[in-house]
Image (tube, rainbow, N blue to C red; front, top):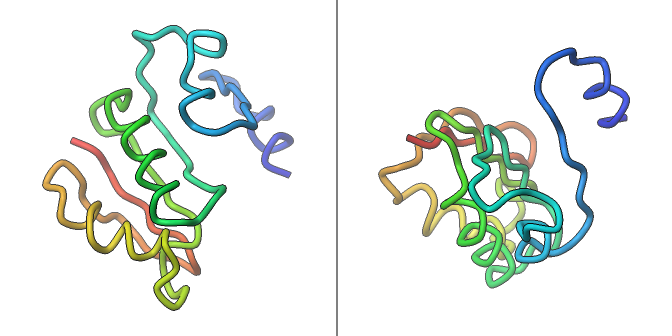
Length: 109
């Protein structure tokens, strides 16, 4: 569904990578100087894995980028929810935009 929706957008470029964050961020997929406007974190929902995702992608975020975390809200303190509550919401570079269903959406500045 996501690929069909994204393919209908006439501007921008999406790189679909199914791998762990450190591998996905490698030059094999994207140039090291490339900044991203949107990162969607969804995979291993453990605290440690979300920490790795966060640490991998935050240095690559463009100004005003959106970073969304799946299963980070209303999930009975799952690792992903705990990480977002303890780290992301307390990081002054991020502003909470919205929480909907299990998703937390932040803007980076």
